[in-house]
Image (cartoon, rainbow, N blue to C red; front, side):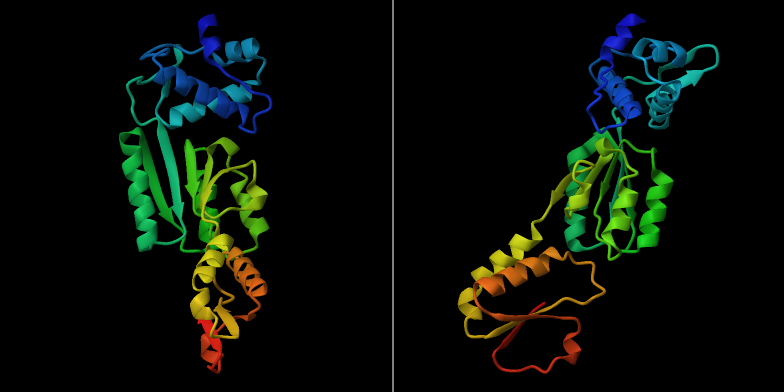
Length: 261
């Protein structure tokens, strides 16, 4: 079985756990046709001895591949390729903070693009930290990838501690960048700070008839604080008085003040 080990790629500098590197190497070999139906894999002991990797790591990699349907095992025969023609190599945990028209566009595009190459389990946590934590805790190691929109009102450190339980090679964050997750996740997100700055700058001819700009930003919101950074930078650069307000109902509306909602 020495030919088998040519397929295994282990990068000691990678942040991806070794068991996942092993699993990904086997998946790659199956997709390329180098491993086919009923091909027998090395035993855990043989693999461990040949690659100088712990038995627990090998067993975890094999178990992971069994969970996503690529491997099977039979007593006396060991582990073998269950179905090399299997198209659904990717099993994805998709977690959104809420439903909206915008989120539906993202979801529809995501599913259409993946087509038959993946199965997707879709969950919504409704900006509820406890539900967010529960859903992730129950799903760890059951998926090839985790795609998450991390809009939460709780302390960012607590949220990232949970996200860091997911191996770096499996986590993709959407819609919001979290600086402390740098190196632990791939990210596709909006630049909220620059977006609001650009929008206000475009509206400058209309805003110039006001002396004060107030932005409505309730303290219970999950909206990114980067919005406030862009707002403050614009007002400072263009010499507007500016205030962040929690509740519009408590405001006395006066001439010369414009509100951003």
